[in-house]
Length: 137
Ligand SMILES: [Zn+2]
Ligand SMILES: [Zn+2]
Image (spheres, rainbow, N blue to C red):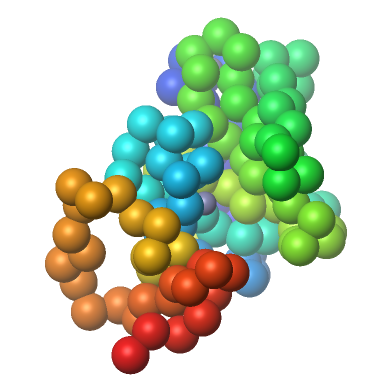
């Protein structure tokens, strides 16, 4: 198990591996929500993420794509993502998990939607195209 929290500490949670994936998302929604060129997500079965404190602080924002982004209403930390394409899965912002999990980032997604001002400078596999998940050569 690995503990996580938001910036102010009001929200405390615990994730239980095995995770389903870990990767960097370069989509424009993540970029805007997090104020960063990309955000690193770790996907877990929803029932393997246990909110232990601060549930009343969680605000859910429903995006135009039908996904939900959950953040702490006190400090603004972005914490969780749920989407119709990932039934039963909760994506957790890796930066807010305080301990190592069972994997490290494995790939970049939505690379064709990435910020003009950010250059990917590692050798991880890249996926893009309209869906964000098509393998790039
Ligand atoms: Zn907070
Ligand atoms: Zn994204």
